[in-house]
Image (cartoon, rainbow, N blue to C red; front, side):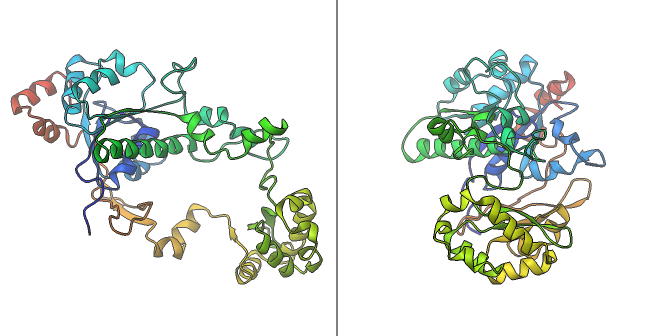
Length: 398
């Protein structure tokens, strides 16, 4: 295997839970060295989120692979001094505290950048580092709502729903990882210096909302929830089959639409010139959905999907975790990998994405136990055994 593309890049992760750590996980998968700073005693709260095995979340095995765990109490002055020392040799710092927290500890951007001008700092927060709401706590659910996503998600006339995962956090993490890569390129390929990257949860989700704002700006249209449909793009919906299962059919491409209509026995719709392009189909979306639903309702889901595949119409089942784990395509592409946790559990986790042909990423080592690398990292930073012992005795490190 060729050298991983981020090999030699040192990242100091001060964040916890999802957004910041997801950004560093993405960088770690491609070779970056991640030193994750955790609170002595409890560590990152993600260790206790969702389902646990022997006291540790199995989610932890995916989120914290390829990382080293160092326990430092950031609330104590000597702990802050340790972080400043580590920051002097870091390429990147990633943090997702509420704005102003690091400044209170003497670890803000201005202080750290002055000591290490090459430093890149990713700051992830609910509302950004400035603006009237900067000081408010922000979680993914709130960011998704503020970005307009929650308003359009769900069934018409019912309570707005959220996706079953923390989209706002992971999307912010991806934006953050992209920002770090851009800043590294500017620094290392173009002779620049370090810089600060400001990522807000709500802005990251807002960036994905497609035509939501332009349509309101141009026409005063406020998009509403549409269930399984994709408003203004037709036909694209979830359709019930005779066995009670729902399948997804995306027949909204012009040539795909014609193939779909031929398949369901509606040549009249396939040849209707008013349906040749999407704007015409969108005006008759309910009629098209009814025609497709009549066809799918007469077949079991397996038969319907087989016929759709043969007709080259994009379609699929709605996968559960069991479906994902058993799917041959996932396995064939290496999208699922096995890791073994520190307590011996073998668990499936998402593999490395995206796939690079010459410098692929890799899961190099398992997620760490709390404080597993504290002594080694501090020794590498120049501390003596006596200094480390004294810090441990004071509860500064663990």
